[in-house]
Image 1 (cartoon, helix red, strand yellow):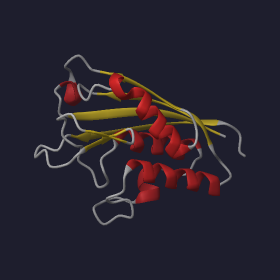
Image 2: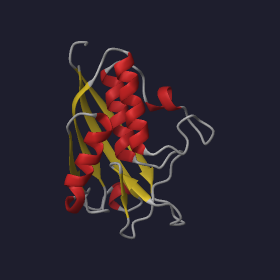
Image 3: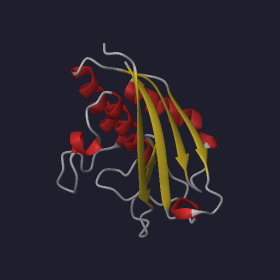
Image 4: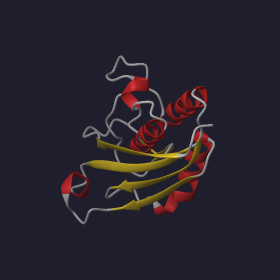
Length: 159
C-alpha cells in the first residue's frame, strides 16, 4: 500500500430539461419529481466527483482517463455505483485503496437529509470504505442556486 494521500474531485451536471431521465445521485434513484442529470452515464455527479478524488489521490488521472468521454466511451450508460466499483478495482490494481471519503452536494434539490444515511450506505458499499455526505445550497446564486443543476465536491483519502 502506498503512503496515504488526499485527492479532490468536482463534478457538475445540468438537470434534463425534458424530464425524461431518472435522477441518480449518490448511487440512489431519487423519485421525487426532480429531473435527472444530463451526462454520458447516469449523470450521478456525486459518484463522478468521488471517482476524480480517488484517482487524483492515487495519481491515476481523472474520470476521463478511466472511462473516456462521449456517448461512445466505455463509461457511457454506466451507473455511478458500477463506475465506483471499477475505480476501486483500478486502485487495487495499483496497490492502493480508498480509506475514506467526504462529499458535499450543492443544489436546491433533492433534499439530501431525508436519505443521507441510505446514500452514505450505498456509496460506502460501492467503494468498500466509509463515505460521508453533506449538502448545501448557494442561497440562490449561480446555476445550482437557480435550480439548473447540481454540483458536488469530494475529498478522498487513499492509502
